[in-house]
Amino acid sequence: MYMKRKNEGAFHRCFTKVVGFVALAVILCPVYPSGVAEVKAAGQLGLQPAIQETIIQPKATTTTCSTSSCLSSALKNVVPGGQIILSPGTYTGSFSSIVDGTDAQPITIRSQNPAQPAILSGYSAGSGYSLRIQGDYWIIRDLKMTNAQKGIMLDNSNHTLITNVEVYNIGYEGVHFRDGSSYSTIENSYIHDTGLTGAGYGEGVYVGSAEGASYNQNTHYNVIRNVVFGPNITAEHIDIKERTIGTLVENCTFHGEGISGANYADSFIDVKGNGAIIRNNTVYQNGNQVIVDAFQLHEIVPGSGTGNQFLNNTLYLTSPDVYVVAAYSNTSATVSGNTRSPAGNMYKGNITIQ
View (tube, rainbow, N blue to C red):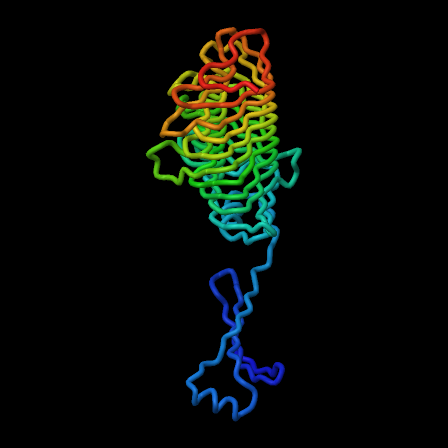
């Protein structure tokens, strides 16, 4: 479409084009000097008209779904600021999105009625994801995730909030911050019954990736807050991998029933990263004799597992032999205000008590 207009004495010839299926309008306006003499002079000098661009963003919309096909389509076509609202019911599939929100316009997926949360169910505990997000600035709230190999997967998803979700009956890990996902949070949630098809891989929350994996290990400054873990999480409740920085775990509750010992899973939290803060949490061993330490630190690559803090945690440990914090090899930590009941081992390794 072409149009002519006058603007402050300058003559413009503008046209609008539609880019892609999202109807992104770009208005291109060559700006010419006003007056014939100026146009002729510009041409003699070999000057080209300047191009002014005005980009009109797609309008954010709210999509309410009651079917799996609607949900799949909405995840594909959502735009920044959009909302995907799910009616009560079960949505079966391996759902994913690669769309980015923005700081000012995050994308939200939520239940229509938090008292009757929608259930995102995979096809089986042996494959796929309940929900995989590969975009930034998402809000995932008031949902249940079940019956998939992995529950919620954040891949290169920054500034994403997961809140008021339940993740259960999962083949491997419940929630994974992977492939560089940073500055993201899970809070006010409940994770239980993981590791159904691989006990040694049934972490509650997994932060980062193991050495040698093909994913970006720089997964930094994520928050795990006010999450209830267990029962029947078969591996560590939280596994903080090497090369991660600044993970915060606070105000969580851990129930030890179900930790299996498979693949060295014998603690509630295993810290291999740096600068993690573990504070104000409550831990229950629940008589599980597989548990060796409540919190462990390991060095996987030189310098990993250092500079971590364990502060004001309350532990109810059935066995007096279980350590509250154990720093293995060259790892280190600072501790303060931790209490255990009944009395027993407290700290092992390079621990600084404040």
